[in-house]
Length: 191
Image 1 (cartoon, rainbow, N blue to C red):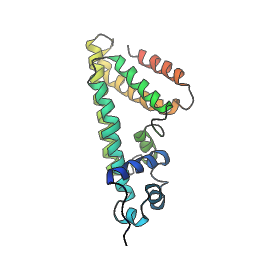
Image 2: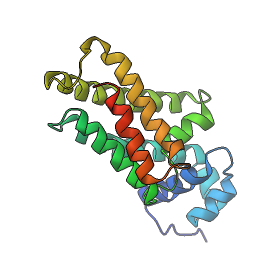
Image 3: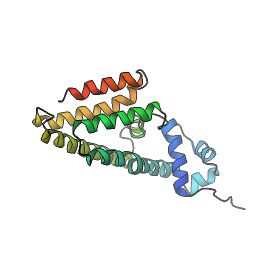
Image 4: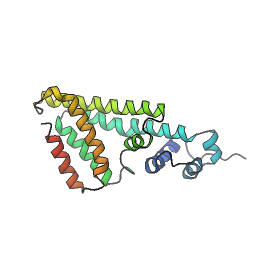
């Protein structure tokens, strides 16, 4: 008699996301995934593959975690303070363990690099939205006279994108307060 699934597909994606976020993609076997999801191995091999669950978990992360936060700063009325708010929110999420590990997409970029075309398309979407959101805020900051060199907007965007990924590493060696001071010092470099 076939085993009945106790979860919807979306719930399986959420549970799989947590495992992939903590352990990475490559180390997870279909058996690990089946055990974590409380489904049979045949369900993973024949119905909801490891790659399908992984891709959908990345898509879910972008749609429900990354994009809403980027939209919040994009549509804020603040200039550079929007970045301080955003980075402080990220720092708090890391220290409060809202995230099981540092940025899910950053972990995936480091682990898989350019090995999977579908993942690369998600990277492009993720980084494209980040770049667009950052540039929207920087343009607003220029209009608010918070930035002296408006012609350097592309450099500032890259610099700020580096900060967000630097946070993923620095939170492991700095206290919350030290990291927030560091972030304020970094943002002041573009004022």
